[in-house]
Length: 96
Image 1 (cartoon, rainbow, N blue to C red):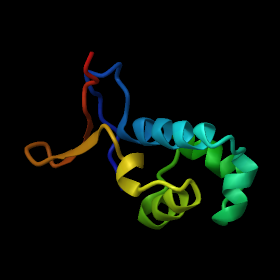
Image 2 (cartoon, rainbow, N blue to C red; image 1 turned 60 degrees about the vertical axis):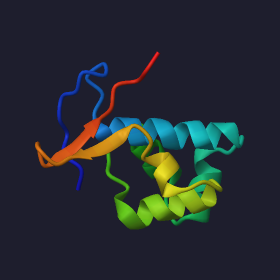
Image 3 (cartoon, rainbow, N blue to C red; image 1 turned 180 degrees about the vertical axis):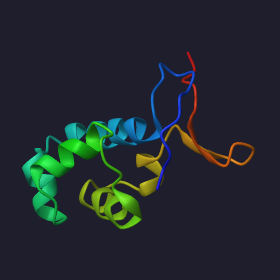
């Protein structure tokens, strides 16, 4: 499970960044929460909660979501990295 920690990037949490990435991928494809959820055994409400960073999709959920969205789990994790010193996931600062 990914820890919630404060970051310098607008205090965004790792799950919020992952959710933002998933939302971006879903919207780029013109898919609804219902369409995505129906293809990977999630409800529209669950997809929305993942996109808002309220719930952790887990590794299986992330793999299913990325497959349904025609992308990779790596793309969904963009901007989140493991910090070995802190032993937790952190959100990377955006550049530019």
